[in-house]
Length: 440
Ligand code: AMP
Image (tube, rainbow, N blue to C red; front, top):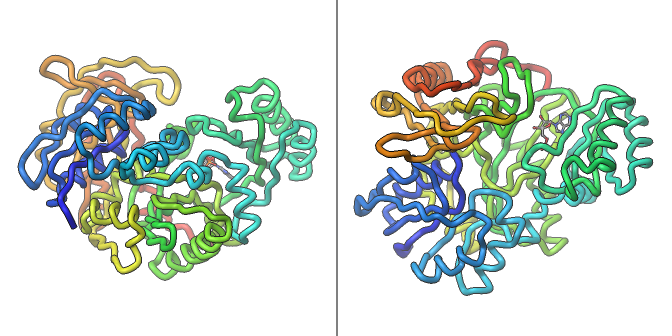
């Protein structure tokens, strides 16, 4: 393939991992990130040793991103977060004769509207939770009561990962419906709700790279959404991941993937949806089989950190093929090593937190072999690096098996300090101790 200049849009740990992997591609001649973070700005290109440059353009500043991409003659713009996709970044770039990787606005609805996804799953026979879609609170409450109140109330639109309320009884369910639909706790995202039965089981993440016709399944991974050990505390953007998932054999994974991606691809074809990007289904493995909880339309964060430390193929070649509908003949090569990512967060996250705390020990952690510290909410301040967000770092390590990768990740975490640093101590622990049975 031809060499090119690349722009990555976003500023989190996912984008650092994308930049780190793209920088290894011999096809990348220059690399920018908008707006990026302190870690991204230290990466160098394998091809020519040039530093990656961060540009102070917001991920949702579409007109200025277009101008920048034209000015720099960017060959491919790679979009990390969901919001710019839902706003139609890819469509706008195309209209301006530019290439951007990620689903167009219509395809991004899989994440931007839970009601759309739920209706799609039911229409095309994709295994999912029993559910209903409502734009009126009375009917929503009646349906929630029919489930005995054991349900999940989800705001339809994008709500920064917060618009999902888990309910154990009718009282809680009625309060949740009022919260979302009447009090509008998540703004207009809550004008419609999806109510799903509350599923029990083990949650895993799937990713598939798609080009509108073909979907290539990644290995399995698992995120840890709650803030505290033992899956306690508030839901977060994700506190740590690992891959592969030891209790999911390759054949099971393939079977699960086919049961979702088969009907999903034919559904897309039937509805004229041209999905080029990552489809990331959140899945519950239940006693009655795997069920899709939601679709995301971009790389997971922090799933990307463990996936890209295991990916052996050239990422630019894959993203280019996904954009050009040329994925079918390509194979995705994965290392047999296991990878673990532990997120270090600011005190108070996912609630309010303060920024600007000095981070120490990054160099000491980087001295460990098979360790990469991906930055999320960090900024440069004078000579040092300070915290600048809720999730601060994604400390990632890879090794022969999950046990040693996990030990290595925590050894690296132990070398890093900042005031109030908070992280879970049980990332990948359950997978190692009591491998779950009966759910798969
Ligand atoms: P979502 O954004 O739809 O994935 O929901 C966020 C989180 O809520 C998921 O990662 C699950 O942990 C939980 N969740 C969502 N839907 C359900 C469900 N039907 N049953 C149980 N837990 C759920």
